[in-house]
Amino acid sequence: MADKPLTSRGAATKQRILEVATREFAEHGIAGARIERIVAAARTNKAQLYGYFGSKEGLFDAIFFGSLERIMDVVPIDSADLADWAVRLYDEYLRRPDLIRLATWVRLERRPTGHLVEDADRLDEPKLRAIAEAQAAGAVRSGDPFDLMAMVIAMSMAWSPVSNVYAAGADEPEDMHEKRRALLRESVQRVVAPT
Figure 1: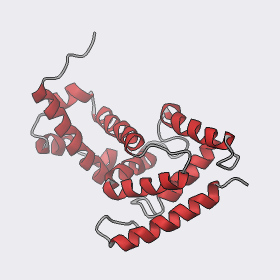
Figure 2: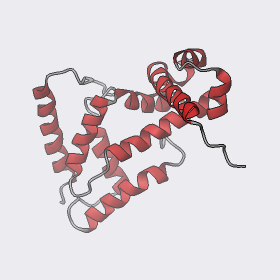
Figure 3: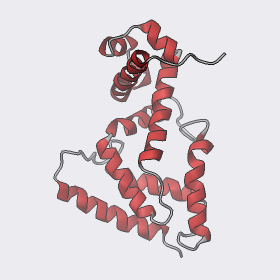
């Protein structure tokens, strides 16, 4: 049986739940998030929340998978310029630090090893294909495309909310961000350059 389409009012309620829950999960994690706070802030009730998402875990999954897809859409990979891709990821982390915090909670509370999501192939496949094509064209060093992707992403997160040494903020002076972008761009270029 197909889901009934949402009314505009139902769609607005569902969107409010997602927005409020994103903040709640980013701040408190999966275990620490409270459905009571979410429904109160979203001006709805538990029955509606569970009707849309099934459970607290289902709500978190919807938010987390949505955040991964959002990053893919907002910051698509550019196989011709992986350094630029890393810089655009850096900028996205400044705009949306909550998305990185969600991934951190997944790592802490669900998957201490391996991929963050069970269906990682679906999310990684376009990026891996782009890197493999750049390798075939001689624009990127040889090696496992997944490992290269992981390295570029890790470098882009050097100053993100998951950094072990410093979390940059959007309110810092722009010249600081420009210096980091330049260092990141040059470092990624060196790492991925054909050998």
